[in-house]
Length: 352
Image (cartoon, rainbow, N blue to C red; front, side, top):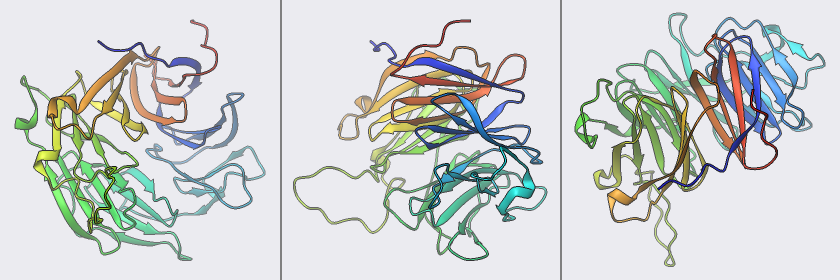
């Protein structure tokens, strides 16, 4: 039996266009990208907009934030914007760096910043995966030597592996790269037989991914399945073990599971702690699981803790977590954008 959900909605923020991406600059600042090419930065103590960028030509599909010396407010990679600009509202002309990553007929899907803030990885609709070296005066782009066979929806840096990334996409495949060399290290394709029961009308497109700090890889699938890879997990041990040369999260078949957990696509997910995964379906069913990575029984690896429906979102595009907060973005039935801020602390927002 599930536990009651400890989170409640403390604030709903409304925008003219659907929310397409979210990122925390830190616990007090929320960056929100919209379909209409607008980026807003919210101060979460007052829920007021601190800064905004308007007039970008395309949907803001992903945001990566980093701290620059001397600035309290984080800068944001969509283009690179210096967010402590004097004016409250900026435009594309205020970008301090612009890097062309794809051809005009391609679409950028996800970007990710590595912990050292030296590299930015990206994925595209054409299946391309790449990385940008941010340490050079003119950022250098390295494109991986193998592409996905369809849309590449996700890319993430592997924790504690300074030169490794994992991408995933609609070809039902994970690709693991040494991004400095651009070469694949391992790969894995999800098959229908991995799903535990029933016949799904949705193919196993990989819609979302998340890494825990200990190297567990999770993926949300279009058919409502949850994929977990434990092969690269760092384990607590009393005896000193030799560190493997590379992350092995895709290589060990016995440490991969894929189970049907919900109805509908799992479109966004985030680890809130090393063993706690929170995700949302397209229609706003939010679920928390405990990942029992030390379990010897596959049936006990994924334990659902609670699930709760979003308050008013018709469809969800983004979910992120930090400290005691969850932010969920998407749009209402009327097509306008909305962000729900959930928290374990504070005062619940009055019902409308």
